[in-house]
Image 1 (cartoon, helix red, strand yellow):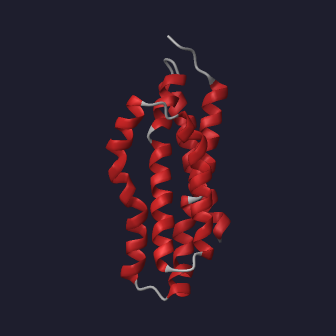
Image 2 (image 1 turned 90 degrees about the vertical axis):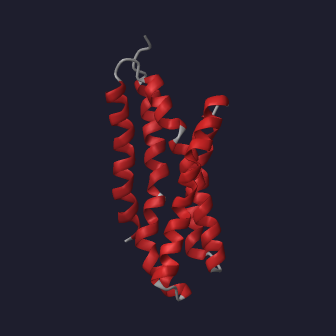
Length: 150
């Protein structure tokens, strides 16, 4: 049985924290985006739905992750999510908002599929402990992300 690899688990957990800070920007930014673009509540709802649509691709991404190494996804997706979510404030149109939110959602899916599997692998017989580190990163990120935008 593998031993608990605390260094690698903490690295992934911190990546989870930095990754999930950026999607937490959306809710506090939404009223500003509504004002900037003159959006209705329906338009705003479409934006949030667009961000979540890629989650329907989770089985496909999971299938790919089973066949291919997804370690580069863990490296690249926090940056992709950070860039796409950060560009929301300077997006020139509603259409660009939709594209950015779709890409951010896809990036989020590509991070959250392989990372828990890797945590399980690195945790040895202490999977609960490893997942608690990982989940703490995500939970703290939700708080920090909303505070950063206020």
